[in-house]
Image (cartoon, rainbow, N blue to C red; front, side):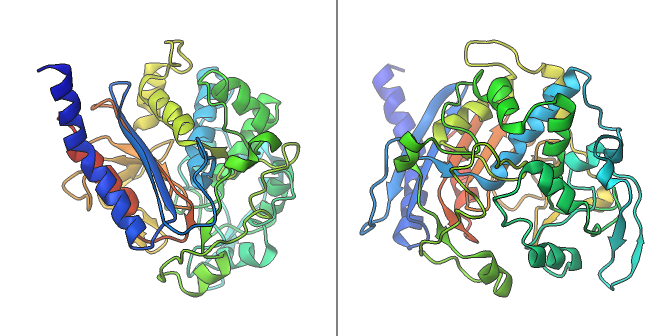
Length: 398
């Protein structure tokens, strides 16, 4: 097959990605959608679609708030420390952060009990017993929300951990998978163990080696014209009507997710800014453990170790709020497909990754050497756009 036919075949195979993105734009669900898909280290497709009639234009190489897609990067930093024997999964949290030495569990019926010790492994896997401020029917979530813990972008990561230690847990450590601030606490553990601020550590150990030039917990003043506007619903609106559609309406998230506090703001569960191309570099790294020029940062065996499911059968399927994830387990970095026969959208055995609250998404398929990144900015979106984009990408594989 000659090169022109190969290029024509690729365009035919990937046109569904463009169709899915455009359909979501035409339905008024998103202001813009950008994506990259790579196979074998080479881009299979990339593109961006933008709604008509906006009061802004799509900048070159837009910068996004990636929310929970911060988590896999922080977890990877934890893996680097594990490889250096500076961090162990079995270590009790209280041995590193003494403020968590004495905790209680607040049950849904209002009763309290003494909490078992939390381990570092439980922080990686959201089984430490913490919660989030948007989890329905959870009294600990209500306490977080009343305190404003998650929306206070003015406090340091150290202050965040100290405040979090004053709240009870939502379940006993190890009892169940419960999406939570656990990765924020893991980030503070990483700071203490490494003896360096999280932002500086990620910059030196991951962002610089991978040439992720636009990824950090802030946006440089000279690049703020590239920062994408946020659309969707506020947390209060989401809590009042969790099943409602997210409107195509601009909202201000600067207080909770500041772009101009490089000396104070860092988190483990959210907080990073990034671009589609930067995050694709990270996704590719999750397959090889190497930089683009072949310098190893993490071993193949550590990647294998990180990729294995850690949830027991009784903890599956895990539920993210009111939504189950059948077929998926959870490893040290995020979801991992264990049983495609249970999956509810096109995927493949071993596919893994995570998404962000503003509808960003990425996947890594190590067996297929296949990665994808989808970027947009719409808080509270309940559409299937992200998994539809992944399905469209999978059907493009030869």
